[in-house]
Length: 350
Ligand code: SF4
Ligand code: MG
Image 1 (cartoon, protein in one colour):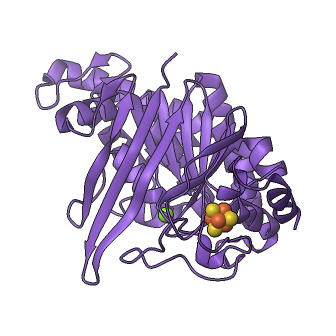
Image 2 (spheres, rainbow, N blue to C red; image 1 turned 180 degrees about the vertical axis):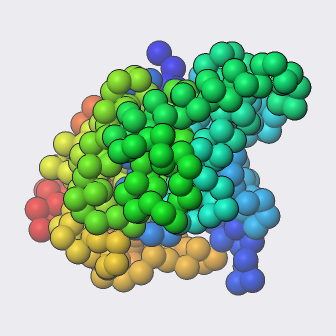
């Protein structure tokens, strides 16, 4: 059956003062119905740009989608902005990255939740036509929206949900604000959620609680999710499948256990070896830096940092995705059958 969401050969450029940056260079990705998929990679690898493209939130300019397809339930959206907006409003919810910047300081939680319900057009009592709601029905709608908001805050285990509706975000803790953001994402009854590092700013205990709560909501509603993180520990707790992204390309994809327990790509291996160092404040688990996107390395974009790089091979063409095990794919010449299998094995064991 068709995947719920499918990206094929996506290319996104950014026009900067330094030139044209190819920040997404041929990404393929899909999310099946009921599946939670993580994109894992360092800051700046293109994972947020991928999310913004899916949510039709890419700033254009400076961003520019130069190729590829994005299908949702088989419908192509990249060339059809009205369809993209409709599908986003009807089916997608987004959990934002930073609680402090994504909640308005001047509106109460209740006002913001009412806005989400109003602009999404959905209430418990049916579809609201924005600006046309007659006085007699407005009361009923307001009440229904308030009840729906309370129900969701309650599901996110926010104490005193009714009181919280009248609070301003600044009056809540970081963890509570993030719960409000999850509740807001669920208000529109999405079937597909995108979360971009929603727990990064929080301490580990609060982070764990939030992931637990999010997992519960996903299971309860049978939702599908794309979860973006630099933190492999988080990916282990939430994802069914993981895409490892490096410098705007997919390095490896597999089930959670394949990626975390049997990583194949030298970059994935480096990431996993550096788990303890992968915190919000220190991400330098692997020697070297992400490449300059205006002049990315030829061939495998990882080759300047790769301990297994092969001269004359890895700096030639971009490696295709090899599939050494069913569904487990890796963009690395070590897994080319034409290569000396013994060499590949030795490299892989180092
Ligand atoms: Fe390293 Fe070459 Fe594989 Fe790239 S293709 S990850 S440079 S071995
Ligand atoms: Mg980001």
